[in-house]
Length: 327
Ligand code: DON
Image 1 (cartoon, rainbow, N blue to C red):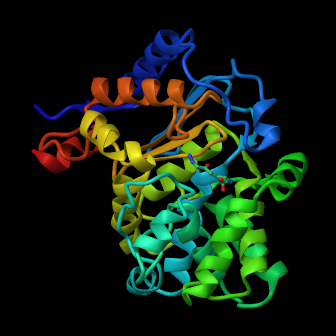
Image 2 (cartoon, helix red, strand yellow):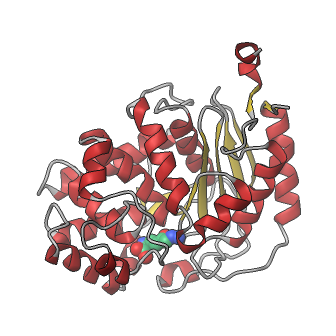
């Protein structure tokens, strides 16, 4: 039987998962970016945004944390919006690497393209694609503005995080120049790397991530502002990318378990998208070995099971408001 979800059923599931996972103590904060090691490990929040724009929250959903790799989703979308999905496929690709997010090996193995905009190499390449080429300030305004439009409110860089990342991002610097070596970066490597570092250092709340996810679920229309942010045809493209690589080398296990296309970041955030149904996010800093929040994964997996969010199930959930259209 198809499960119909409304604000009430989502609220019950969010609150139940929050209480159930609150005391979970597994994982460790990322520390290769010094700022992240100091974020209070007990913080935990869950937010869901429905097609009518209502946002359901539990816990620390107003704390601005580092968006980190979740930012790879908006930049990939913006690159597709400025060029086309086909151009993103051609210039970057859509294959999962099966390797860690910062893998140099993946670049060497995939000689034809960096594989996907949702790993560091592809994300730096996506930043390089953003127009207008060569103009760092205008490119940054485009990226920051786009993320704000997706999230329904402005996002700001956490300066201390940006300084912390910039002072330690030697691996990413190597990636940017390796891409240059293979002709797979489309603007100045240092400029592209700095844009990537800045976008990773943006502060977002779980509420903002849930709204951004709901904008993707809503085929590009932000349900809180009612503004169109990107072309409807891009929702299946970005959701496919999230499903194939959102948790790096743990993506298969995640998708097998939950069926929920989602993207994680080492700041502890995870954003999940159920097209046509809802956007959901959770935040808790301690991570597993692949760089994915332990508590946020547990919470979202629990909610996905309870609400039948898995997109591969023939009878996965639908919004209660869509009931009439399906009978
Ligand atoms: O480039 C990095 O390593 C970080 N700024 C982002 C990595 C990240 O969030 C991986 N995701 N789980």
